[in-house]
Length: 440
Picture (cartoon, one colour):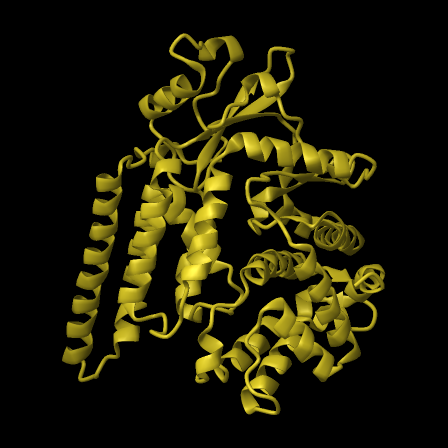
């Protein structure tokens, strides 16, 4: 639940948000100077990277982006889940702190947001509107209500100015990253930023999210393992999404359940991801654990938040299936061909760089290649992948932004790996992938 002591107005308007970014840049620079002086007094010769990535600056970044919310915070979340393909480990760890709850809007700003959606005559008391939010995230916050038919429901209310600030927020964050020196100068992230702008505009359209929620409800209607909220169209607007409320608890609470139940739930979630990609070609790409909940009474998995749903091209799905098949067969030539079709820069034939990238792909897809149950709780694969990735960063070819579709899919895949590791689950991933491999 959002902390009522963290109520802070969302900065609206380009100038106010630019001022927030300037304040962030100034604070980080000041932190660097202070740390530099401290290290010089201690007789050390500090590196710029070490000065930038201090605990104090980490707090400044997360505090300011959490205060700004909107696209600034969302972009930080997206970059934090790049699974080691794009950002230095230290920066990814700083941005990872943005996955926690954002600050909530103060009541007056919330009232104005509701009036903007429903008109000034809309009466919250008629719906037993609860002013204390259940949760506050990067783009909106959630409140309990009573639907006109008496059912328990929620309203997800978008922060004011979010849609209008997307372009400037993305540009400002990108400039801050470039000026920081954390990103190599030769790395062209513009294709990713173009796609991020589109993705964030789509996430800010709650009417679009309502359609995707309904699409997933239809697709999973016969699967008793999953339960999804029902959209309430009469109360849904472009900036407010109304849904039925489902009593459930955080997915992380599954850690207290028996191993068989943890394994069952993670098997269902990984199977769902493969169905989304290979059957629906429609993937909910946000890896936030809060998007999954658990209903204790019947063991159902509650699925929430479809704003980050992304359509995947048939060509990418086909080529990714071939990439997975080549990895399972450990066919390095076929793997290189499939990776190039997906969009990865593979370097020259027989080059050391090419071999390193193939090693990384094989390692990243280790759960697919493992015979039988893969024990996520005991796996050190992410650490091994990070170590191997450090040996690739010296190659110029590496600093081409990975294919955007791959970034989004791996972002979701990495989130599920983290959840499976947290729950110490064991899953036969290869068996789940097998039916999709035959169609690749």
